[in-house]
Image 1 (cartoon, helix red, strand yellow):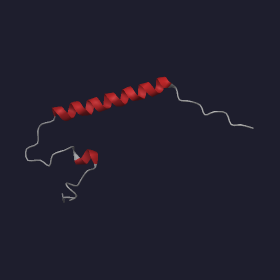
Image 2 (cartoon, helix red, strand yellow; image 1 turned 90 degrees about the vertical axis):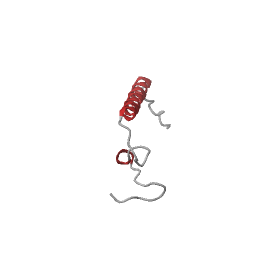
Image 3 (tube, rainbow, N blue to C red; image 1 turned 120 degrees about the vertical axis):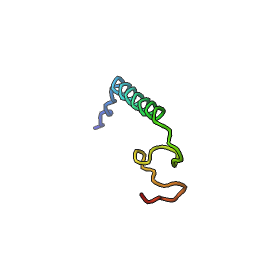
Image 4 (tube, rainbow, N blue to C red; image 1 turned 180 degrees about the vertical axis):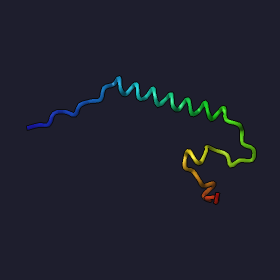
Length: 62
């Protein structure tokens, strides 16, 4: 007795999910580009959002 092949996901749902993800990424890029420039900051992306609390291997105290 053989198993039936697994059901494939609906391609319309996958395309919609990819479009929604692209829209979210575009919104993040837009907000990042419109944010005020930080003077003498650490550079890079916001550590609170991306979880990167170290700079060149050193984690600063807050």
